[in-house]
Amino acid sequence: MVRLVVGSPIEDFETECFFDDEFSNIKLSDYKGKYIVLFFYPHDFQKPAEGELQEFSSRKSEFDSLNTQILAFSTDSKYTHISWIQQGDLGLMEFPMVTDHAHQIGRQYGILDAEAGKDYRTVIIVDPEMIVRHFSVFDPQMTVSVTEVLRLLSQLQNNKMET
Image (tube, rainbow, N blue to C red; front, side):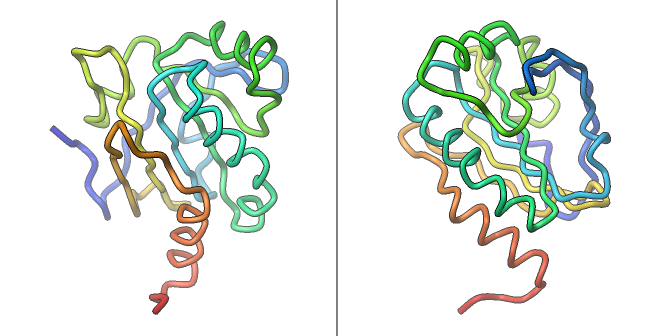
């Protein structure tokens, strides 16, 4: 059951993340006033997510130019996030790696695969007033196109259709 509705306010959350070599608590509302891309991926230490996260990170300046904060989520713990960054092939991330270890956020937004214990690969775009402007849930065999996310953000901000 999807609980996100385009054009409706998104529910706030508070959870832990790893960013800038430290653990901290964040709330979605901390980013009010900016566009926010919430990127959910199934698990750390998986090649598809690794490539997606590396591309989001390498293109951070493009998101910055669109006044957009990226938040990356999985149901792994904050300790798994730091291990992946420090010991795996992921490398430094230019945005918070958020934990949904308790499955609260995935359940809240209706994107939790409870049987598998993971969130579906999902992209949610929220505007500066905390209104859902876009969300996509991806088939497990598909990956997210960062170029497409940037195009959607640009289109939302320019309020015109590309043809």
